[in-house]
Image 1 (spheres, rainbow, N blue to C red):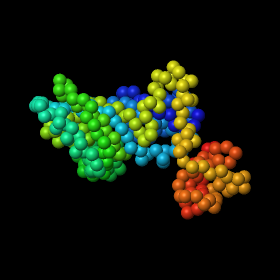
Image 2: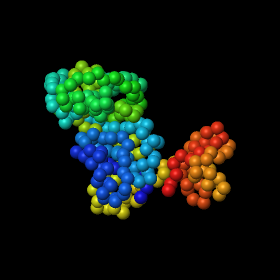
Image 3: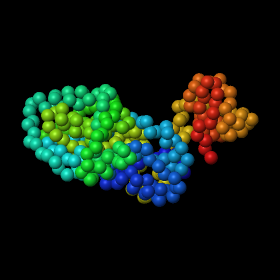
Image 4: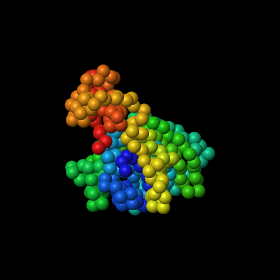
Length: 288
């Protein structure tokens, strides 16, 4: 069982929990994930199975889409609902609120610098930020460049002081920090109450399978596997002759007058991926 399977991660599970469960239930030797989700978040979690783990370098730069619920009027130390409440403020809803919210959300579109939350796994001086935070220590956190491609208001719940929005953003974007920044621009405080990841690169919730389905309907798993061949099906093909194949498999560059780029490599069967650069083809990822 080699390739990628998309899990619809349930709430209150870490990404590591999901990896361990899938590894046990599917009885596979290697399982990895790309794009960690916090325990209180749900949605798309791509898992790499066996030889699929070789594909990780092609998946780490993916952009992402989220459905977010922002709770206004309350600030927590973790910037989400798991933390301790630090401050509360009364909100003043008015007739211009929806228009103002839309304007504020729209103002975040584009490239910008974002300061990651203290409760994150980013390392400073060899220690993760959350290790400092748990000890009450402060440390300077450098802003990182991110990009918001689109952001859309979906709902305003005045009774609960919540707004719901959908965002499409670059790798490395912290939605908890985004929620805090949106609240500030609205003249208040807030935290991320709910987070559902709906898309990672080309992987969507529609392709996902739940942990419950894996347990109760294991026959569904095989049809959900995204093979390397399927993942790269839009890329061009190169068919090797027998004498070329041996050199290719041994890592020897082969003359190939094609445009620079990634190619699906075939002999009698599908071999894997190769890269052409300056009319030279070299092996990249090979199925064993």
